[in-house]
Image (cartoon, rainbow, N blue to C red; front, side):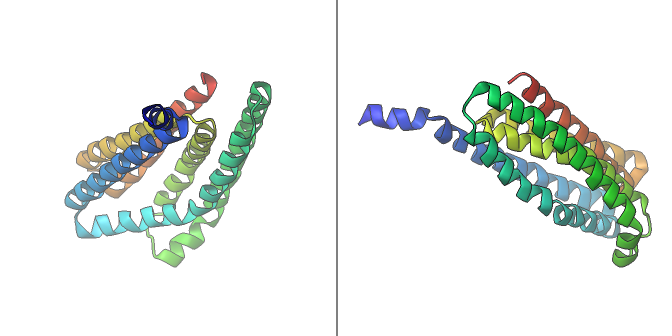
Length: 204
């Protein structure tokens, strides 16, 4: 019985699930602190604007989020090391192209979105488009890592990216950049997240 329990505990899926749960809760806590601090620093008006922009990011991110499930399934179904390398290389190229097209599409429709949502500063939407160029790649690279059962690496990249967003937002808002600074931190943290996930895929 003990051997059976030990076998279950040591299985990559079990330990990976535990890491995912712990990591997801940690990321949620960081994001909770982020909203709490930004609400205090920006005030009701500024935070309301920031919250609407974050909601827009979440809405637009539904599409790539669904693609992640397909990537996880495809990567996890391949067993041969050579095939995995070929698939990962192919996915990285396609993900980069998709990120560029996705970001350009947001830039094109940004005036219409700004008009519809009554956003006075269109630079915020430009920041969102640029951040998606990096965050979309980072997010889909995490799907590859998850398909490869690299749960620790995936969770670590999430924690670093969200932690960087939290710290950089505080710093930029403190310097007086207000909502623009908070939005710019999304770009910087996405670049960090992309670097980490790309590093792990290169040295898996």
